[in-house]
Each structure stands twice: as C-alpha cells, then as structure tokens.
Image (tube, rainbow, N blue to C red; front, side, top):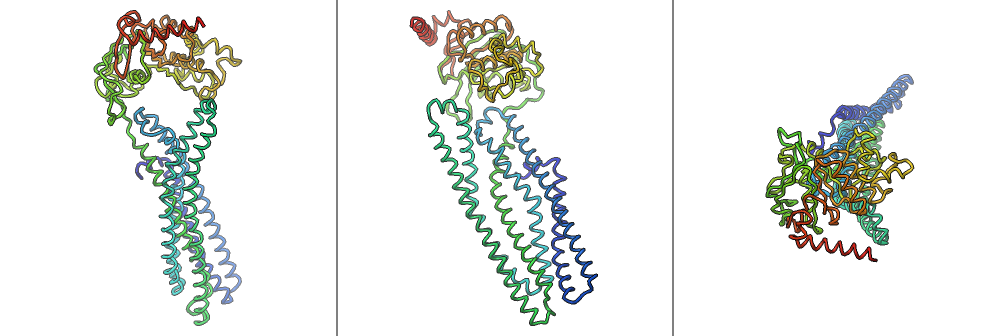
Length: 582
C-alpha cells in the first residue's frame, strides 16, 4: 500500500526531504535554547558581567530567529509537498478510472468513487503532511528533550518515569476507542454522497412526485449517522486535552517541589534555579511531543481506511487491455457475431446474451426490437468492446474486436444512447466531442442531417448557445438530436442509435433515417427502437427476447413469420389509428 501511494509523490520528493531537514534543524535549536537559558539564569544569579548577559541574550534571540526560519520553511515546504502529493494522487486515480471498463466501474458505485477522489484523498493528504513534519519533529523532540532533561536535571528527571507511561497509556486508550467510529464514517460518506447524487440527478422526478420531504428525511438519516459517529469519536479524542494537562501540571508541581527542596537543602550545589527552569521547559516539550504523537496515531489510523480505498482503485486492473501488435485500421463496418454468449460477471448464474449468431454487411441499416430486459443494449455494447464476450467472438471489419487497438475501434464506432450526456459549454464545444477538428461547415452539415439545425438557429446565440451541465436547458428531443449530430461528426464506420430517437416525433425520426440512407450509405447503421416505424425500412430487423435472437428478416418477412413482431406492429398501428380517430 505504501509503495502504491509513494508513486504519486514524484516531483515532490525534494520538498518532502527538505521539510524533514527543516524539522531536524528546528528541533535541534529548540532543544538547545532551554540549555542556554538555564546557563543565562545561573550567570545572572552569579552576578555575571552585563556584557556576558547581553551576549548570551543575543545568542538566544539569534537561535529563536533561526528556529523560526526553520519552522516557517518547513511549514511552506510541507504544504507544497502534501498538496502536490494529493494533486498527483487525485490525477492518478482519475486517469485510472478513465481506463476502466464498464465491468471495472460496476465494482465501485459512482458515489464511492467521488468520496475516494475527495474525502479519502484529503485524509491521506493530512496524514502525509503530519508524517513528513510532525511525525519527524515529535519523536526527535521527545528523544532529545529526554536526553537533555537527564543531563541537566539528574534526579529531577525521574518525574518523567511516572508521567510518560501514564500519558502514553491514556493517549493510546483514547485512540483505540475512537478508531472504530472513524472507520464507520467512510461507508456512511458513500451513502451520503449517493443520496446527494441521486437527488440532484433526479430532481425533476423528485419534484414531479412531490417527494422532497422523503428525500430530506433520507438525507437527514445519512447525515445524522455521520454526525453521530464523528461526535462519538471526537468526544473520545477530546479526552486527550485533560489527560495532557493533568500530566503537565503534575510534572510541573513535582519539578518545582523537588527542585526547590534540592536547591535549599544543597545550597544550589546539586540543582540550581537554571536547571529547574530548563526542566520545566523540557517537561512541556516532552509531553507536547507525546500529545502530537497521539494525534499522528489517530490521524494515520483514521487514514488507513482511506489509503486502502484509494489503493483499491489504483490497483484495479482494467479488464480490457490492448493486445500486442494491435490492429490500428478498421477496414469497413461489417459485423459478425459467432456463437456469442455473455454475462456481466463470472459469478452471474444467467447469461445476459446466449448463442448469438449474426452477420451484418457494411452499409446495412439494421433495426433491433425487443421488450425491456431483452438485452438489446448489451448486444450493441459488445461491438465497440465496452464489454468482452464470455464465449464466442465479435468481429468488425473481419477482425476480432479483441485484436484491435481500443481507441482505433471506438473511433470507428459511434454510439448514441437514449440518455446521452451533454456537457457544460457551447453547442459547438459539445459537438466537437465527436471531432475536435471539425469545421463550422461540418458541424452545420451534421446538425442538418440530425434535424438539429433548425432549432439551434432559433436560439439567440445559435451555435454559440451555452448548454448547462447535463443539457438541462434543452428538451429531451433536442438533446438527442445534438447527440446524434455529435456522433455523426466522428464519421464512423458503424453508427449505433440505442433508442436515441425516443423523444423525437415520428416525422423528425423519419427525416433522420432518410438522411442516413442518403448521406451516409457506406456507414453501418444499427437502430434500437421501441417503435416499429423507426425500423420498418431497415434492411434487417432483429427480434430479441430474453437475451436471444428469436427471429430476423425485413418488415414484410417478419409480419409473416414472427408472432412477436406482428403483435407489436398491430398494437402500435391500432394505437396510432385510435389516436388519429380521437
């Protein structure tokens, strides 16, 4: 786990090392200051010349300034190193996620990935900051202060033999009690983010069904769960302060009492006033170091869960990889399924697709019809290798899709989904996702073909109209047509429309299909639809049911041979007649 995370330090190794060196310098100076201060006190008591006192005082001022410089430099370098490490870690995670196949992403929920990219990385950043700064400073301060205390205080230093074990035991007990609550919080963060994401994405549905109060209640339960665990943990951690103060005051009282007794009884021959002042300072340094170590222990232990969750993403191997000597050219848009069976996971008991044999020639228009859950979308997702087949093979242009360079294959296949995504930006910027080098003329031509040009020109800013995040300021039909135009700009060899004209009226749908036939005759077109009218002009219509192809043929053939197709056609035709008569 440490090796995995350490790879993200990269260019921030030098600031990390310099932070450690700055902490070493600061500790050495801070440990020496009480020693010199004690000598100064003893010198003043012994009526030393004023010149000697001033000289020692100036040395102390200089040492304090040097310590301050070390501390400031260490803080700045630590901030740079830790924030840079977090930046690299976040980028590495995001790039890793981009390489995942759908089956990889299915292992992590979207809300969990968001939590890992934000909250978990913040915890790891804080831990790294403490490791390279406080975790170096505190043990050194503790060790050097103990050595100096025994060197200067002698018998007085025995008070630490009592105080240190008590403080250590108390701090460790507090930390161990708080850890379970901190660990539970992360899973609850996932549920909280999931609640927020679902609510924001489905805001129209929530308001349409007047479920605001239910969503508030659900969010409140998730938020209360986090609050409860954090409150419990913080309540326990808060005991650190009284334990620390008890030990500090106890140590102060013991040193003052014993020190005063030794000074009076020995006539300042065994212990002097300077040693007592130094012992008090070293006592504070020792106890503060232990306090900081307990905080480090809490933070690192709390972050261990975050580290594991981050490493799960970084160590997840993409299921889909480029083969050696991958094919980099797609000859044409021909497609062939040979004895294809597919299930989403190895543990799945049932195949989503079973015994699929299908051949589509380049340039054909193919329609796919079937009920909900018949695996129509699953079938077409195997073509651009969004998933790999479990059994059999899928070939595009005469080559198995597993032998292609993945980018080459997907650049040759354009998919338009029913719920396609538009991004915040202008219409032009969204369309250029299909081809970043597309000219304005090419964009207009694609939009005309997708029947989008007319409504775009009705906007005041036309193609420079700003699209809100998710395309919330355009209608469903407009969004689908923009997505079709974006796909056409890729100039693909295979165009797949996955129920992507469902929000478009039948007249516009007809114009789109007519444009496909006239302007992109060499592109293989696969249309998944619920309406028979959307596919009845296709060269080949595929009927699917329960993950299997039950029949194939053109419109005329299927009306004769397929009971399912005939039933769908009659229902829709009858429904259309009823509406017209009404």
